Length: 113
Length: 117
Image (cartoon, rainbow over all chains, first blue to last red; front, side):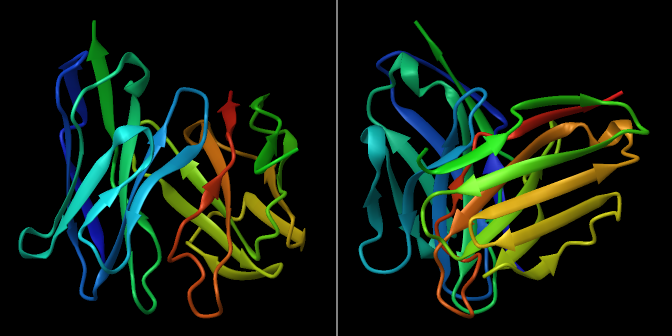
């Protein structure tokens, strides 16, 4: 079975500061890892994904994430937060074989002016 | 229309009403999904369809009845719902090879905000 844990249901940073959203996963097979973003009154939009290959993955809107197998982590970062980054962020895991996409509980990111 | 569309965007219904949610994907995908998103729980996968055949039902109560007439359209028929069914219902689609449905990127609609009185 697979699972995802997002550390911190709410994260608040100042505009221009580093954004770090934490995600740890559990998977019995090599994982596929995803970050999605959900803006108010909208569906989820893919930010980035890791399947195989390079462990540092760059996504849209300046976000990136690094797959660290030894730490079973896939944390999402952005060097400088913008007001438009305020949203809910979901980490998700699936895997090779029969494992479907499983979502974490989400982290609400607030940007302070 | 592009992407995944859902109608209505908002729905208020009584416990004895019957209503339907509609989802349409304009991406040529083969798989479609219904998810429930409520305030205090992670996204819950409800149903999966692949080429209009249901491949997964995650122990969803029978008061939710899905219908997939073709690969582009997905419905969720609702009847005798409970207040705890109030949530955001999200539809998604994906293009996955056989044996890998639901494992890769999914494209989401904006959701239907359902309130059951």
